[in-house]
Image (cartoon, rainbow, N blue to C red; front, side, top):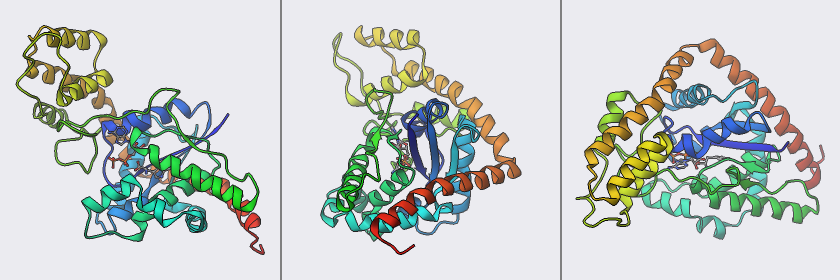
Length: 330
Ligand code: ADP
Ligand code: TRP
C-alpha cells in the first residue's frame, strides 16, 4: 500500500478534464492505497484573491468529489485550509526552493501572461505549496493530468533537497501517476489546447452542465471544412473531437466515424450530435447525484469535519518530524 495525495483548486465547478485527468483515478485508487484527496482553496487564492463565491466554490468541489464516487469511508477528503500544518511546511519548504527555478516554471509564466495585474508571490511559490500538500503525508503517488508533470518534478526536487540538506530521508519522491499509462490531457472544444475552466466560454463541459448546455457547447465546437482526400491525418481540432469520443463514446461509435473520416464521407454535425449525446449520458447521473448530495448540508459538514481531523493527524506526524530534523526546540 502506498500513500496517494491529489487536489483540485476550488476556482469553479469540475469539468470532464478534471474527471478524466484526475478524479477517475482517485476513485480507482481509493480502495487500494492510503489516499488523501483535498480541495485546494489556498491555491485558489493565488488567482482568485477575493471572491463572493469562495465558500460556495469549495463546497461545490466537495459535492462533486462525492457525487463522482470518492468515498470518505475509503479515503480522506479534506479542505486544504483546514490543515494549517500544510501552511507551516510550505513556509519551511520555501527555504529550499530557489527563485530562479520558480520563475522558470511554465505555469507561472502562463499565469503572468493571463493575470499581468496580479503577479503575487503566492503565484511564484505555487509549486512549493503544492509540494507541501504532497509531502506532508509522505505521498509517493500523485494522480494528476499531464499539465501537472512539471509541478511534480519540482516537488521531487524540493523533497530531495530537504532530505540532503538535513541528511535524513524524511520525504519519499512523489511521482505523477496514471496506472503506468501516459498522463491524460483532455482537449477543449475550442480547437486547441486543453479543457480548462479558465480557457474561455464554451471550452469546457462541466459535470453539472444540463443536457441543453452540453449540446449547445458541443455543437459550437471548432471544426474545419472536412477531409479532402481519403485516409488523411486529422487536423488538431478534429483529433480533439475524436479524443473526446474516446472518453465517453462506445468503440462502435468511434469506429463508425473513423471509417467515415477515412472515406471522406464524415459529417461533423452527426459526429457532434453523437458526441453531445454520449456526454449527456455520461454527465446525467453525476448531475443527479450532485443535486442530491448538495442538498444534504449535515452530511457535508460531517465529511468536512472528519476529513480535517484525519488529514491533520497525518500532517502533524510529518511536521513534528520535520521540526525535529531542522532543530526546533519542540
Ligand atoms: P483547471 O485547469 O480547470 O483550472 P485544475 O488546474 O484545478 O483545473 O486541475 C485539477 C486536476 O485536473 C489536475 O490533476 C489537472 O491535471 C487535471 N486536469 C485539468 N484539466 C485537465 C485536462 N484538460 N486534461 C487532463 N487533466 C486535467
Ligand atoms: N496544482 C494542481 C492543479 O492546478 C492542484 C494541486 C494543488 C495539486 N496541490 C496539489 C494536485 C497536490 C496534486 C497534488 O491542478
